[in-house]
Amino acid sequence: MNCEKIGKFIAESRKEAGLTQEQLAEKLGISDRAVSKWERGLKYA
Image 1 (cartoon, rainbow, N blue to C red):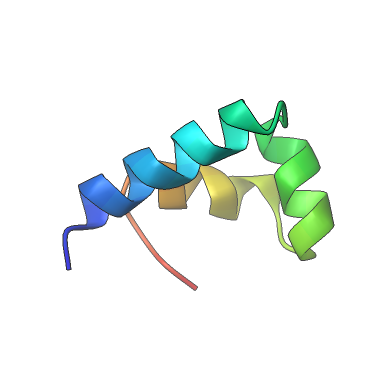
Image 2: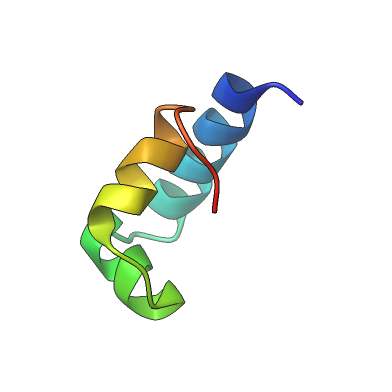
């Protein structure tokens, strides 16, 4: 599993949906820090 590739996909999908990291986090019930880490390929919940 390529974490950087998945992170890029998450970021692109979020931007296409017109959402900020904070808005996506709120919809998922997680912190915006978690979204940031996902997008940078650092960690997955």
